[in-house]
Length: 278
Image (cartoon, rainbow, N blue to C red; front, side, top):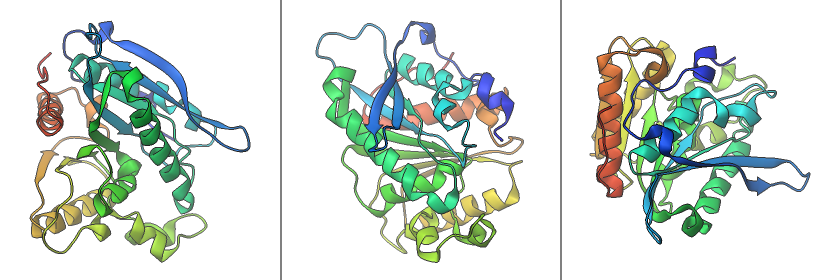
């Protein structure tokens, strides 16, 4: 069960104008044959000029999520505040629900994520979005969903951000309820898909919580070592006293510094100036 603070508390960093952003809620980005829908909220900066396009940040939530909660995730405090933070900083921000219920069924949320990106790119004009300047920002159990962006070039994606993420499924696949196929675990393990040398993918930022579960941090540390060996463009921001979810749970100077530096990283790579201090 997710920490209740993630459902209610806002992110600990702010910039001016967060209450003035425009929010388009419950947009259906995918409708399945059985009639079930996947929905998205899009946050837009205030005061956009006619025809103006802004770079985008797409948030990928973690999981697995309890079945009774997965349709509610984009409405949690962590994501509604992130949407406002990024929009007030000059980006178009997208938060969305994906059906991540079980690790052994990880291909289902992966299809949702691909559909969400297609929806945003195809409707870019209506969102005031530049579809060729996108950042993907993943959290916690959403880390495995970064693997496809490392394995191949995805149109428009300029950089990746990982906050306290699980980056290797292989060490835990035998503990997954119902088991997990070895090939599937490797395919959705960012560590496993990194090249041995000469990384050519998008720039990466990793934020690590020092007080996180060791089995999560072990995957982060292994990823960092392999990314450096491949000479990847990599920023690593460690919060020595940070908990899993430090961006919401630990309202201290280091959390705010990490968030401000992440906004600057994204702005540098998607090509916009951002405000980083609230």
